[in-house]
Image (cartoon, rainbow, N blue to C red; front, side, top):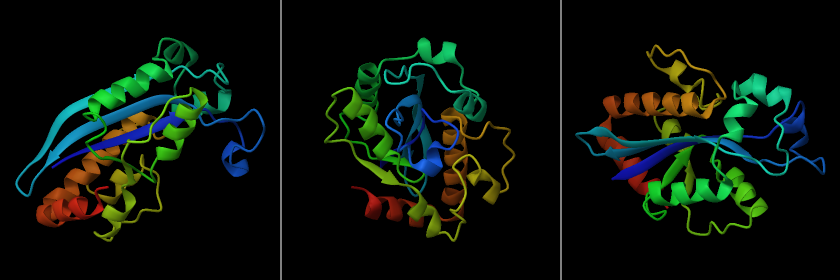
Length: 195
């Protein structure tokens, strides 16, 4: 079976998470997207393809100091990034017309949907699921960020937490460890969880 692991970073400000982006000018608009497409069987854990890009927001075009410090993403990177229309076109192609199910830590579907809504883009066929229940079936602590997940395993990674490229790497390396532990169980769980 094929799955996609992905992560997003999106516009944020000091205190926006605690406020749940409730101020009238606050939007969760994607500024970075990273994904890895995998082929999983009981015998194999294969990386098929990767996709990474920065994305230009339109509601708050200037990144806050808070999000730049948190993610290490800078203004030049997003200004050279894709438009939201280009992003979703690329995701559509990468996921083979939304046929390959997508998984993120906590399910970033709401961020994809908010960005799509801002840009009047329809996402009704995109399949996105929360990856955490898979790890919970292996008794892994899921009360951590995606960028900290790898610390549950004997993995040596030097990454920038809260950067989609590195957070996706943490998800990938951690999932690889579950496959080593019990590949048949992992494939069965993805088959059962798949939308």
